[in-house]
Image (cartoon, rainbow, N blue to C red; front, side, top):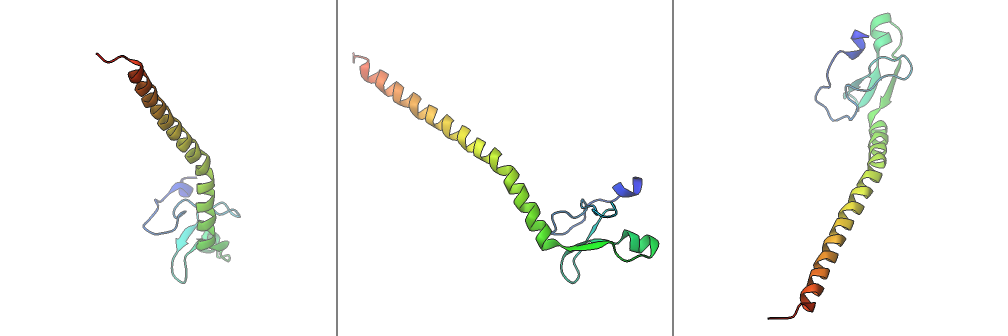
Length: 108
């Protein structure tokens, strides 16, 4: 397990760099930029001489991750907008009530 947690994400543009795990063998995948960005699992190749487990083009994975993130964020964002607009509406209502009260107060 210690080997599975080693390493920190390095510089790069891929969203899952340093945190992607292979769904086939369970080892950490790495980001490869040469020849087009992709996530690669070559643990079995480098440790047992077997073919690379899998490689996946990063553009499709990152697009799906970004969409899932925005979908998950949407309900929270909608709630924030509703709360903000209800606070704003309450403030407008309070101002209108103050104006009406001032209009009802006789001038001295």
